[in-house]
Image 1 (cartoon, chains in turn cyan, green):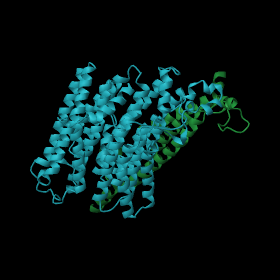
Image 2 (tube, one colour):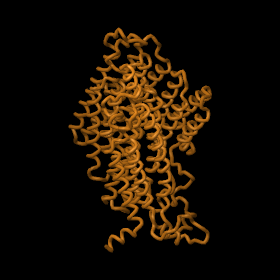
Image 3 (cartoon, each protein chain N blue to C red):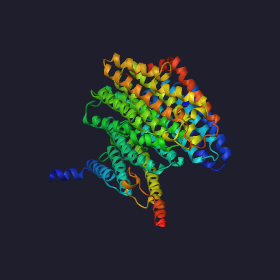
Image 4 (tube, rainbow over the protein chains, first blue to last red):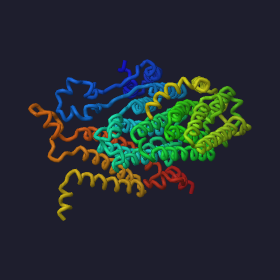
Length: 497
Length: 142
């Protein structure tokens, strides 16, 4: 039933709005929050693949009776093929990512509810609204629709930082908003140029118009549009030069919220990345540009991560580096590389969530995120410490975990494409990632406990342990059986190229 | 002179020029001015410039409002109506822009109460700026 497709967006939005109505009724908020959080990963599993046309407005070509009543100028033109309404497209790729997003949203919401004595209605509202916005971005086949939901997700991310009540959170939120308010309209302007050239904002229509030479593919209008949209993509994804502000955003949110924020970033990165790839991959410099920015993100990400003493900022910068691997997949533009890049995106979602929740337990226990002031935490809860260690191994690409599989595929893809230099950089970045993680892990868990470290007598919340364990199981399963994801993604990648 | 008059008389072209001017002025204010409120006004200029640009795309000289009324032939309507899509897009964009501005202004108010200044370099810069509370505590100690 294709009715499930819009429900993936409508349910979290409706829940978010209802939570506002039930503000201060804590039991209702908790009940509704948990029920909807459970439903989120279930809907993509039961929904059938297909298209959903809002308002039932399918392309005119599908309705011959209506088409025959229209002027011949429309009947005989590409307008008959164009999509008159917002279209949602649901396939294997969307299923995987929305399912994973649902699981992460569930853990973030459940942990927030179970670990805070006071229920934060606004935080719940923002988490559900952000999840809905990101799901819409992933489903949408309409570039303007993507822009609108990106702006909504940016607002929710700002709200999440504001509700976190961490030090200097308002300053970070304003910085993010000012940069976003420059990046967002420039993205809109790029969409405006595409609209001016093609007359539609539907991605399938735009691709049709360009591929059938209805517009000049190398016209200055489209080139300028590419520049603006590409700039917007860098901002939305936190790629350089926006990597510092994005990592600041992660570090100012509470760990459970950071889990969701990084998931939003990764999904927006791939959704807009795929849209850009579909529209502009014919440009001669497209692949080079993507590869260059991806390599910069990888190198800058790990380089900045080395210098961090706050483990939240460290994970945030490592996450930027991991985005570079996904970008490489798009940039190399082969079936294997795109499959590898998208598989890496799935893995990054899971691994970074694991690390944020895992290291978040330290913040919960000690209220400290500075690695210099921590130590000896392995004695406190060795099971969590071991699970976090394996999660770090997965991020660094240690076999046989999922990170290893996706990074190996990216290296193979770059070798197949005739770029051994890229594989060398990818391996080096992976090694540095391992070193950065081990340095932080040693500081937090292995070195002797400082005498002035207090608050470590509390127990790690069971909800966090369960979340880490389940995410770790996903890492191991995807490491041992990568085809569970790659088989589905490779079909999508084939269609993309 | 005739060329300039022709350009000035072309509503669409003038709108596009105005949009470009809005965006350039807005970018200058957002990047180079230090006062946060002025930055926000600059951002509003950028947003409105982008909106005006998109609205101008749908303009049709001598066109009619894109509402199909009884008595109109489909051919005539298709040839003479303005393009409605940009207007619909901009309506949504204006709402989003207004929400963004509201949130930014609200955050600015909080930061002004905290620091007693609206200087972006002091509030958002890398150097640690004393908050009003810290300044007051320092004055009391003296």
